[in-house]
Amino acid sequence: MTYSIVSFDPKYRFIGIGTVSGSVAVGSRVPWAMYPYGGVATQAYTNPSHGPRILDLLPKSQSAENALLTSLKQDPFPEKRQIAVASWKYGLATFSGKEIPLEKGEYISTHAVCIGNLLTSKAIPMDVCEYFENKAHKISTPRTYAELLLETLMKGHELGGDKRGDQTLALLIVGETEYLPYYDKLIDIRIDLDPDPFEKAWKILNML
Image (cartoon, rainbow, N blue to C red; front, side):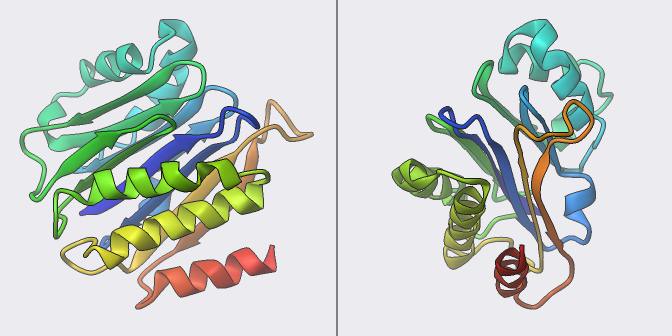
């Protein structure tokens, strides 16, 4: 149904999430992030409560994997979920339940976790993660981070993306702002039911 990347930049401590889907309004339920703790993507048969719950658990458990497993224990249907967690402080973790749509895939690299389901190819998460890692050194601002995430998502699209077609996109980057601890969003872009969500996302990014 969706493919996502959850990532972080250890130098500037940005946290970034990009997600693309054939479903509507994924930006309202898939990407979750909180500075300085980490980011979460919760998808498949989405249980959006995993996002804020895992972010709350991260500093308490001191581990992305422990926070993820603890959150799953509170879900009556964990095998329907696909979740990725990334934190520069607490590590990376992922989970793909047995009942999520095929093709499905997950991949953990150095600074990112990529997951996907209902894909044209289960190799998409690995290729997307590797593309991100190969260019992650170029990140220096929220803008360059957003550009890299969009390029990374476009790589997934070029490889086939969602079986239903890629028509919804969300991009979220959080970091240090003058409004902490109440507001940490640096970039928040959402495109819904567009025949080319990438073109629209680039247009919006160029307006920021």
